[in-house]
Length: 135
Image (tube, rainbow, N blue to C red; front, side, top):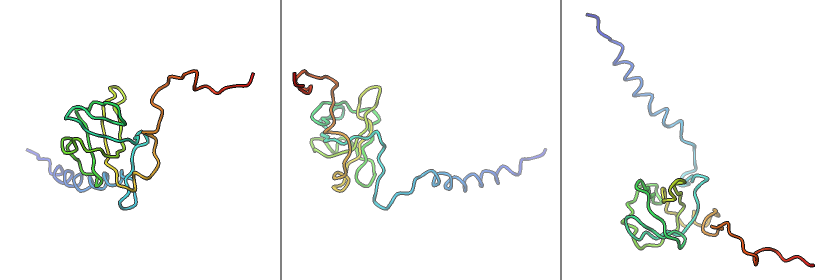
């Protein structure tokens, strides 16, 4: 009976190459600087319960897979932030509108401009908002 003798060598090679592939996919960033996705917005978050929060003075539901990252990019449980207003970058799930990902910001990150809490949240226009023209 002939046995496959090269299989352990292939497994060892794949195991040793895995860290090289995962490292090659990460973009280099300066130490201490985090990259946020372009879709991330800025806001004030206050978690009210394990299912609901206030985001920019509007009620929002928390997604079942909510991920909250602290300033060191470590995961934080939502219940540890109940009733604590924090400045965050966030991403909402497009299909449900639920809060999906949150990054707690350092003071330096919070000073950097980002679209968010000052953005217009409605597409309704009133007659009083239209510019007046001379007749």
